[in-house]
Amino acid sequence: MTVTSPFEIISSVSKKFTDAQGSGDLFFFPSTIWKHEELGVDFEIRLCPALQKKPGGNPTCEAVEIEGTRLDVFAPPYNHNLHIGDLQDDDGTKYAVLLNKFALLPDHFLLVTEDFHSQASPLMPCDLVQTYLLLVAAHKLGKRYFAFYNCGEHSGASQPRKHIQFIPVDYDSPPIELLARAANLEIPDKPFSLGSLPYANHVFRLPSQLSSSTPEKIEETLSKVFLSLLDLVVSTIRHDPQYPPGKPSYNVLITLEHVHLIPRKQEVYIIPETGAKLSINALGFAGMLLVKSEEELEALKKESIGKVLGSVGVGSVHDIQIADTAAEAE
Image (cartoon, rainbow, N blue to C red):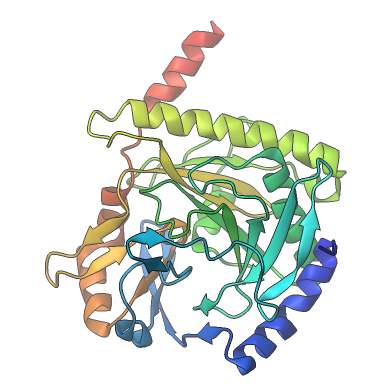
């Protein structure tokens, strides 16, 4: 393992992507983006007909099964043409940075733990730091990414090994970030909720100078932020009597400005009109959805994205949580 820096990683992504596609080690599926305004969010619906030729599941991170056993496709040794480099946290935790073999977006890459850690486990301080340092490096190199993590069986995760995904975006994306930026916060250092959305969501606005802070300060800040949001996710789930048994599932979105956690109670939504099964992961709650045909596209718009996301998410109890917090403070 040769440890590289976040700057070296980001600088290498585009060339590695092009080379891997040329060598046949990476498959890129062209798509068309349709804009659809709803709930104050300019959703991006990505239409990718080529996915009709592939089996179901989450195409952003292909799962492979042999005789009913899911393989750990992110275990070393790595495909050289998909392996961008390696990172190591100050605590010794090691990561591989890999291109997504089945890409819907150019330069889509993954931060994968070298030792096995379950995708059903929460992000640790070292995970958060390395994720944020990659976002900072991209920003300083004139690029913009955001990171997402699908945690648990109902979150849209398709691989057993912990992996955080990164995709490039414009300033106005992911779409949900515009709504978060517009939120007027009475208390800037506390979690908040985007109340116009029909599902529970927990958001924290990061300090404006965090990107220029030391790794130690970044770790301290992000750890506190993540734990405060995770507490709210668990509290939300406990208020839902219909929540399925087992560990909590949730999606995580991380930008330079905000951290979002969204509790989940199911992965798939079936559109009644067509019977189409939509597998929703963190990208759906970032405002970026995927369909495989124009029929699915029209059915989704008719059904309403809010109904889809509300059905696979959990109902908001934000007002109750605020009241509980106020009572504790008295």
